[in-house]
Amino acid sequence: MEKNDWEENREAREKKALEEHARLQRLFKENRFAFELERKQAIEAVIQSARTEEMKERLRALQASWDRTLKHAGPKENRLVLAKTLFWDHFHQVWTPALRQFQAAFQKGPQGSQRND
Image: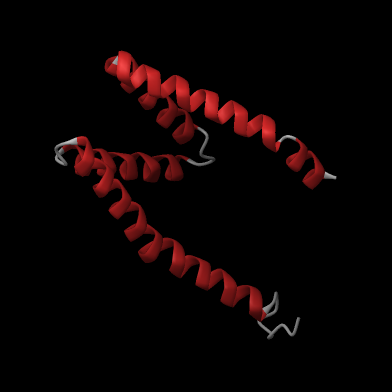
């Protein structure tokens, strides 16, 4: 039942996301200061949604590192290339190994025995 709700609401979520993106894009072009305030508020909202103080601190450190790196990137084109590079580096260095660990743990099963699905 949940999957049906998820699929039924997909178009509404996509429409809402596209409208928000267009609004932020306009704000970025018309009032960079207001855009930066909204960006920082959105980041803080995500950080505050973390369940533990430890996770909140890890997220703040990650954001501070990201901000420091992009601060010295220069023109917007350089910032985009650098952001893509940081993302893919993180994907290959952090996400992929973690996914492999989960996959290996899943294949072993709950008691460490090999699953034969």
